[in-house]
Length: 332
Image (tube, rainbow, N blue to C red; front, side, top):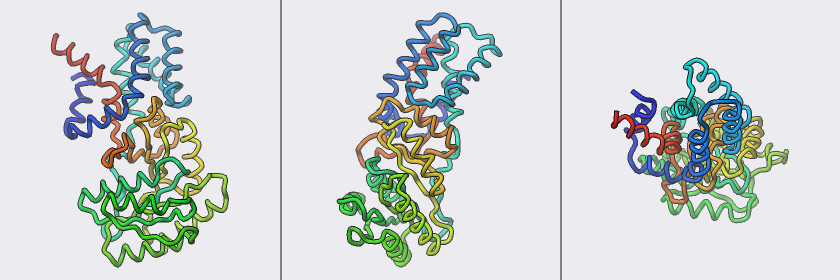
């Protein structure tokens, strides 16, 4: 069985709507990245040094990450020698297979939920990445699974942050625990944890201020929030999720490294993937940080926040190659 056929079978259990969301959300990356790869593979008739250099340039341009690209090219060279491949077209499924291998991680396990009792998720990240929007969409996602959800408005710093979270809570049909703007965020978390316990809530989603990494006092505030959560629910937070804006490319990687040092991240949420042609940042983040991408934002609708799936991701990128491979198999 060909690699592309195996890939299609791997996602056949997913609903058609999820598959189409990944295809639509990755349209910009596919149009730029994949079309350039296709052009290279059809234009070059042999695999030589110029071929590798151009492929390297394309991958780096898609924000796959320099270290990751170097390793990928090295592995491709080894496969070409091992299989005695001469035509670039034969490299298409091999490149796809390698990209899936780079993306594979713990993402299939999904979110870490408490075995029983309250689950607490803490969201961190700088302003403007779509953190509050992500919390609202995840609340909707969890509620649709039958979970009782509560939101904690821990961003008491940014003007309008509490009102924004309340609006998302209204849309998702979940309550928000809040205090006045400028209040101590740790006190908000304390109230929210007690409210969640008394109401028999399944999942508490905690918003925090969009802190700049170099602001020591804000990082200390984050540590204080963390300590309050640990004191009230010893095994929590069950996830510390860093929200990143995919359109910022390599800057997202820098943010992730700094936040990981300070707050012990367990996973990432990548927003605005539909707004960028540099979807390769998913691969760079997965490889360089060894942190799973838990969710990706593929649009602005309430259900456009989707659990990340490496098979879906690569299938959406290379759907044209898969269709061509199926035609070839049908004709043979």
